[in-house]
Length: 251
Image 1 (cartoon, rainbow, N blue to C red):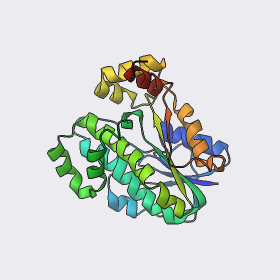
Image 2: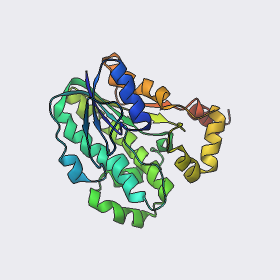
Image 3: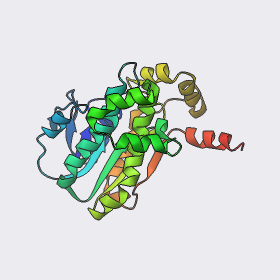
Image 4: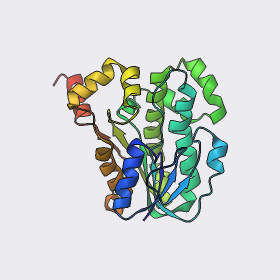
């Protein structure tokens, strides 16, 4: 099994690469930083379409794990939207012709993307933009750092679901994984940006999750054992979504 993992140098991407390698997979990493574990490393800046297009991708891949992403930070709205969604989609489209029949695409979304249905009009406007139109979109729609992050993850879920039929026609499948707070090096960014929203989420789930816990789900979705799981968003959040849903229903 040959797997391409973006963001393989840190956090959930690194944990996913390690878990898949333990299952016998050959790992090709795409990251700005050198990963600790990979059979091949391709350096790329996912905010730059030219960098993605220049990747020397060879051979076939059985799975693609889109784990690269930026957290919400002031003044980085454009980069967050560019990397978390546009870069993800551009890389995925580049890899599609190289994927084996039955191949799996697993993209890291987030609990922050859970309201994609409520925000569908803005999500649909955003996903039609070119990379060069993002800056103007941010200004016209008043996108702040938190909304940039949320929107980027809403768009990943929407894109995955809306492309399910197309991918099935190609003999491929795609799913998303939506973690809540995870104990990685960028957790402080989320705590600072989300404030009480992050504090409440961690309190309801009891603790932040670990990259390894998310990686178990990623590895399952990347493997042939999950062949009948298609177009699904799996929440890996310690029960947070269920509690919030019941609270919203007054249950």
